[in-house]
Image (cartoon, rainbow, N blue to C red; front, side):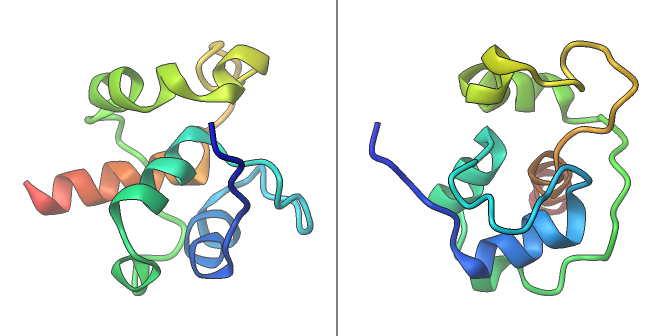
Length: 103
C-alpha cells in the first residue's frame, strides 16, 4: 500500500470538524473512511458539510463491508466496532451523510 499522509483540505472537514479522536499533528494516522473519502471525493466536495453531524447508522452495513473491514484501526483497536461506548470516527459520519445525500 502506498503511504498516504493527511491533507489539510480533507483533515479540516473530516477530522477537525467531525472526529472526537482527532489529535493535531498525527498526520500519519489515516482511518479507512479518510482514505475512502480521499479516493472518491475532492476537498471541495466536502466543503460546507453540516457541523458536528450525528450518525444514525443507517449505512452501517455498507460502511463496514466496503470500508471498515479494510481499515487498519479495525485490526489495531476500533472502539466503535469493538462495541465500546464510543462514537465512530469522523470519516464514518461524513461517509454516511454523503451516501444518504447522493441516493
